[in-house]
Structure formats: C-alpha cells, structure tokens
Image (tube, one colour):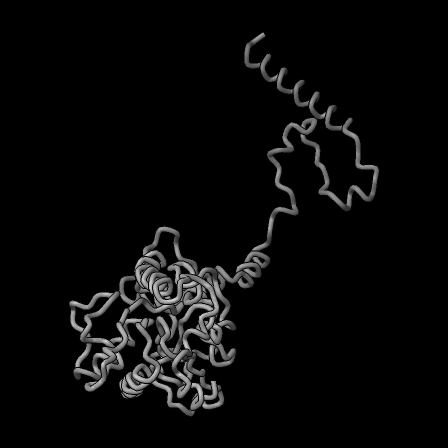
Length: 336
C-alpha cells in the first residue's frame, strides 16, 4: 500500500477516536454550577482548557472606556509615560502642583498691624531684682498669648534647650514661667510686647522702639546677664544703637563688654552682659538641633556657676528671698 494512503487512514482513525472521547465527556448536571461558572466546552479531556479565554475576563470596548473615564490616574487619557522627563519650562510649577499639602512651602507672612491681634492678651514680664539672667524673646506668638505663658507652642524648643544646656535641672512646663525667678533666678521678657503669628508681622520700627524699652528695663532690674533668644533680636538692638545692622563678623555667644545692656553714663553698674543664642522657634531651621544645643551650652554652664558662687546652689532652689534682699523700694512700687 502506498505510504500516503496509509497516513490518511491513520489520521481518519485519530479523528474518529477523538470524536468518541469528546462524546463521552460528562455534561454539567448542576444548574447552579452552570450559572456561577463559565460553560466548559469539549477540549480533549481538558488538555486545551488552559489555552481558552474565559468570557468573564474579556471586557467590551465600552466597559474599558467606562473604567478609563472613572480612573483618577488616566482620566481623559492624560497619562505620562514612565520614562518621560518633566519639561524644563515650568518644572517648579509642575512639582508644586504634585506636592502634598504638608510638603508645600510655608507661605511667608507680611506686616500685620496691632489691630489684627488686639483681641489677644499681652504677655507679662517675669522679673525680680538681681537675677542671674533675663531671656529676651521677640514677641508672643498666638499660642503663647492664648495660653498666657512664655514659649507655649509645642514646636518651640525653648524649654527643651533650657534643660539640655543645664539652665534647668529638668524640662519645665511653660506654665512654670512665672516661677523661674524663684526656682532658677532667671526671668523673661520680649523686645515687642504685642502678639503676632510670627516675627515677619512686626515692623522694624517696632523692634527698634522695643530695644530702647529693653535698655530701661535692664537698668531698673539689673540682671547679671541677658540671653538674647535669636540673632534677629540682637540685630534690632544693634541697629537702634548704631543705625546699621550686624556685620559679617557676628558670632553667637558672649558679646563685647561695650555691648552690655542697661548701663548708664553716671552709674557704677556696668550693665548686663549679653549672650546671643539661637532662636528656639520651630520655624527656625537655619541651625540644626545639635548646633543649637552647642551654642546654648556655654551659657548654661556659666549660669550654673554663677548661681553656685552667689547663692551656694547651682540648680533648682528657692532663690526669691535672696533676690529681693535690699530691694524693698522696688517691691513696694510693684506690689511684689
């Protein structure tokens, strides 16, 4: 028999055999199974099932377009290829629009007149005669004015730095600001007394006028030193004195003796020594946390030493009685 005829007979036999196998496949008996899963078609005992498409997996073109329209990422088909770089023109605008609200740059403040925050109370000075030091801040923030206590905003590092530098034995609470003269022989005031959101809402005129008031306060209370809490405050004082700001040679820390505050021309008192420290505001990011602590630490060491030399105690104690000795005239005048 010719070879071609033999092959044809073999193929016919294979087809008949496969047809018989397909006819013997079991039918779907359970109606629930038929409705819950796609119908299984004869497929050589299931050997071709893995090559078949399920009707549930094939989406119509209308369904695809509906999903595209509902997607926040590919709506209107505004899709950016993964490797497509941002355009150079307007990069900043493009980046700003994609930044989350928490990452956007904080909007700068502008001058706000006193009437803006006239409803907020002013912060009282915390003084006593002959204190080891008085801290000079810029002005009360909104949170501080509302609380009625110095440096009350949670992001402000003032009380943390007092503890880290050794000025206090523990981290004090803002509500303890009125107890600073008694507990640590330290006081507090500001160059501008009115509240505002931040220092940018104050005018240069206010700052310079406040510098003159500070001189009078130091002359009256005669602390051994003042700690200026921020370079900007010291610059306002210098500008009021000399008509110009700080030079490039400015350094944090102790200033020259000629810069002492509160000294009078005919008085024996030589004025309060000036130590310029960093701002403690949470908005101040020009110096790191470690740098701030390093700048504050020498002042803390000096204060502890002076408390020991003057009162025999370097940390927390009741200093009030010793501070008021020989100052009955001030006590009577202020009702202290």
